Length: 244
View 1: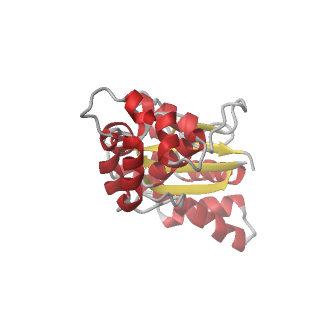
View 2: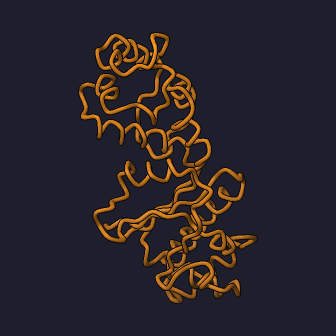
């Protein structure tokens, strides 16, 4: 099983997906790096003719609220299945919404970790011992980060993640799952040193220098996302389990 940690600016993601007009969203998204490499085309040059086609369509004429309504002013998350089908007729609307959301999500990921869940968990527990921390406040018995309260995250974005993120599958009870990482988890890495990472790795593999180096690198990678999480009040850590 894989453990995936994303550090995501969910407040900006919510603004672009749920609030800003589609024309504004595409303008902003085209300038942002595609962190997870979903490679969705957010160029205005591609969007404008699609919006023009939608505006002339029967779908738009029957759905608009007034003659002055413009499809360019609809937020991405508010596009109906019929409107998406007009914009992207070559793709089934449900699939297109998923691809569109993943493209937006990818551009608001600030840091990302992907590693074997068991090995990562064992390392995290060793690190907590090295740093004399209460391991049970940071990770569960499997070494997976404890989940925290999602209450402050926009509910619509939480629903979209569960509905549209391809890594989340509600048909499999418990796995894969996605949850907000508890704040206490990041205490493992506050002011942690390279020597502490190396000590944790040595405790796990006392006679294997190659494995020690690999585990030290893994802890540094998790530390990098911990620091990204602390830099801004608008970002949050999301944890996924993915069956390999």
